[in-house]
Length: 406
Image (cartoon, helix red, strand yellow):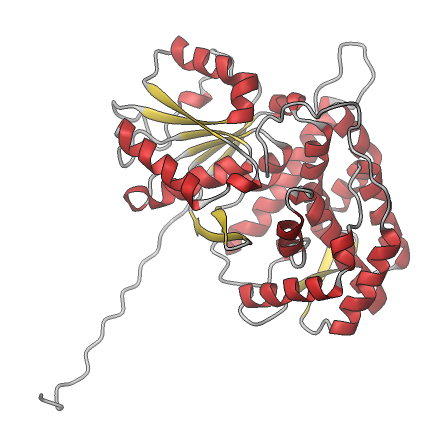
């Protein structure tokens, strides 16, 4: 062996431009609306497109979806997948991959289309990111949570080993189509869960959005974000559009400069520091947005005890959460051992730092890296004081959800 051989190395540098659009439209399933047919990047070639439909959406809208593509004589095949956090698995991802193979999906010109809640969108998104090392796809979110949160994110993911989104990728679809008409068939509790993410965005950066929730939030849930009947009472459609639009715009503004999360100090992680493990331990009792809202309250308690947040602001945000119908606490948030375990996993996820977003006012945040075990214990005691009986829709079984989960 010649030890005198000089060391050799190569540094390869490349940049990948990323652009994706979020389109708000109305009457998406009307044959006159061309949005579902549009292929990102151009006309597209011949071939079959896979349309993946959330099973709850299929019950409510399946006939209309099929009638739309039949009307346009589009070459499509369908796959119906169950939603719900329990189906956010790698096995479901492989089921989508098998179907992509079966229909002969091409690299670019026949992007799959997913219609449903965030769970199904995440499953299809991860499958698309893996198939042929990455193909484009189009998503149509049908729940409030998926319209204001999943619709903007570049991330896909499935649960694994008892942890949320432990497997995933950064793979934004070139197009996302949002139509709040779908929210007409979403049960009130699911809408309240979606409000959890809107609540988060209002708290970290948008006082106007918080004031809209304060004034109209409960009524928006009651009317399912739909326009009032002619000459009828209700929240104007312009308010529903503003609430959804501000939530999407705020999320996009926060994500755009840090899409790949190279900077692990992110204000949009507010509500997601302690809740992921609590949510998984509580399944299926807690919805994602409910757990996020509780985490927002928990973090606000720490901030208030630190003197960062005024007591009046803490009381106000708890009041708004309750008014919307989001319970501010849960017994698992009173378990200091579990919450500390959740924080430890968050620290690993943030590469050894807490990077905890904390409110300094409604619409403003700072970051902490020195929250202590005694502070966690005191916050858990305060969460115990906030526990209350929280009734959801009690008039019989819940209606079918237009896309279940996230």
